[in-house]
Image 1 (tube, rainbow, N blue to C red):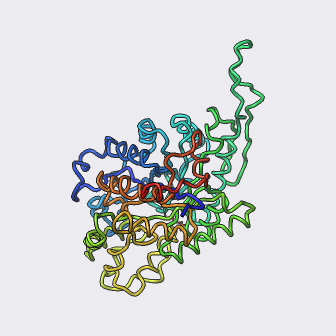
Image 2: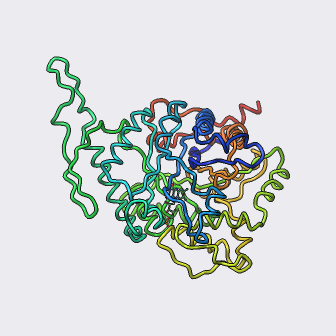
Image 3: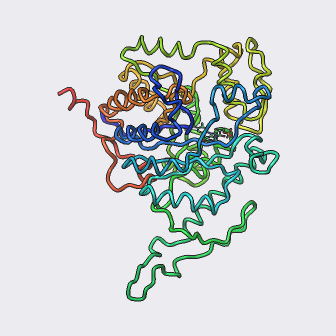
Length: 450
Ligand SMILES: Cc1cc2nc3c(=O)[nH]c(=O)nc-3n(C[C@H](O)[C@H](O)[C@H](O)COP(=O)(O)O)c2cc1C
């Protein structure tokens, strides 16, 4: 059975300590900061045929949970976290084809700085960079930049939309053939091919032009993860790739249909937006062993519940809610609205301890042998019609070199055998073209069994 479209694979990483006190974590706790762990990982992903590594970012430690940094620093949820942007060219230099998605917040970056940074990264990586547009979710982040609080949730998306627009105008302030290098006249750039943009908007005033070269890719891909109605609308208007935290086949289907509908209403071809769903696969030699290991990981303990609640504590103090009671249903936030709503739905009437400890960042539970997990992924892929997956290693907590190998050496070859992922991308594609490319991979199942 050939595939009508290919499955894209990306991996979501935080530049903070990966698994460090679990089996197979080696000396990661003492060494992660030098970047070698992530360099090794990027090489593995590149060789396995992953499309991209997505580098998460945020810029605060939260004491919203219980009014202290104790739990935050104990569990290393948000830090210590180094700045992933300088890591990006280091990763690119160690790899050939893998794309890298840099996260930069629309609440703190000025368009000029961002446009120049991304175009520089695009040249340094040979056209392999993308931008994950996030709006940030905590007043604690705003307070690092001289503000008391973030703008309101929905207004943040208006700012993001204008930011994307100005950044694109800056990228296009140079014609692609502006550099003429005319030796006879001694002219390096044709000045008629470079123009100011004179942008005067609601949130930004930028004269332009860019004082750097335009990106190597025509436009580096825009990633987005908005889950609220406003977030979905922004994604449908601006994103090339959406990473979704939808949970369950119905939710995945609903999310995809709604974003595609919104894209169409905005005059876009819905097929131009690729949607990746999050999974945290749990791979072992047998289904039974994987099930047992997963159960151990998701054991209902106060410690695990605390870690999960901490991840949401960008604004609300979740330590105030008793773990033996159901999660309150009447909470609202100026932070990540959809993530809060999704957790409340997941939690239902169960005691909070059970709901929080048992929650994983995944569209569906994926555990077992590579064959079993590939079955699950293929089933959902065909059922929902999504464009691929974003792997997240259980919120990063179970990320080890061994875990990366289980995915790259066990799961991906199985997906490739089924004709779901390419052997290698077609030559000469920038990251944006690569992500957009639906060209099916050859089905190697019959060849392998012949
Ligand atoms: C896969 C994924 C990756 C995300 N990466 C980041 C990130 O790196 N930094 C950040 O501040 N927020 C990140 N977010 C949060 C989103 O930008 C957004 O705030 C969240 O999905 C809630 O959407 P909403 O505000 O529309 O409700 C991520 C969310 C998801 C699902």
